[in-house]
Amino acid sequence: PPRASPPARGAMGMAAAQQDAKLSAALDSFRSHVAVEPGAIAAIKVLIELIQASKATTIMGLQIELAAAADVLKSHEAEAISIASGCELFVRFVTRTALDFSEYETCRRMIIERGEFFKECSTRARAKIAELGAPFVCDGATVITTGFSRVVIALLLHAAIQLKRRFTVVVAESHASGPGYRLARTLVDAGIPVTIIDDAAVAVGLERADLVLCGAEGVVENGGVISKVGTCQLAIIAHAYRKPFYIAAESFKFVRQYPLHQRDILGSKPTRAAAPPCPAPSVATAAADGTGADVADSALLTHERLCRDYTPPKYIKLLFTDLGVLTPSAVSDELIKLYY
Image (cartoon, rainbow, N blue to C red; front, side):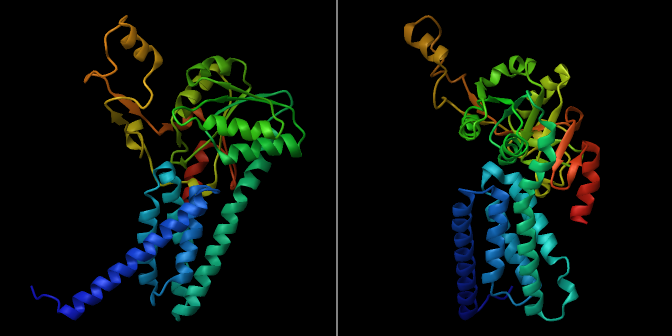
């Protein structure tokens, strides 16, 4: 095949360098936003900034830039699923009317306007969910939750401050990163009594709880949810105790996935290490005092870390979303409306 001439290769290299610089700037902007906002909202803001600064002269060129930026933003593993769904919904929403305009600049202005509108709707979603879900927290109730969810915090604060409900919250520690402590501190600062329990003690905690309320990273097609690891076991135990299990999640977390097994979801596969960052006290002590085999350094010992799990819809009573209070079976209809 014919080779590109040196000037052509130079131009291609310069374009690639410019594209890499744009993506690097987008990633830096995302990191500054995600420090104070959910990953999906931060990603949407970055995509709007990219559209405003884009030098593309066609809709196709703009879509290619957005797709490349979205791929880079998805590398933020902690919220990869919600970022992916938020980016896909954003691109679909802003480009839905692109073919209605004959001039690119007019179309670009409309895309930016639609992008700003989408961002505002996504930002207001949390407040709307709080209003819809707070009445389900009754006076004297005990709520159990796990992980750190901004939507759950907003809902509980609305119930306590706006509705003047008095209730207590039981929070699972959510090891290994311990985000349960962050959630507990936020609620305690607002004057809400909180009890922190071990992750392994959720069955005991549920015995005294009246309801379970958790956030989600993604809501899948069948009404199930992908969330922080530990959510599924909490849902199963709540089902056994006949305690209502509620999910609070924004509509931009609705994803076109249909997992059948835990291994089907992103982040369900464990990361393994030959030695743990902090060896279990019993193992370390047994190895040190000679009362047990020296397994701390054994090649047969591996330590797994899972970041998320999948909760089937049969364990979920209701989902509080900015689209309304939904049953799991209603999610598929809302997904069709959102994506098509």
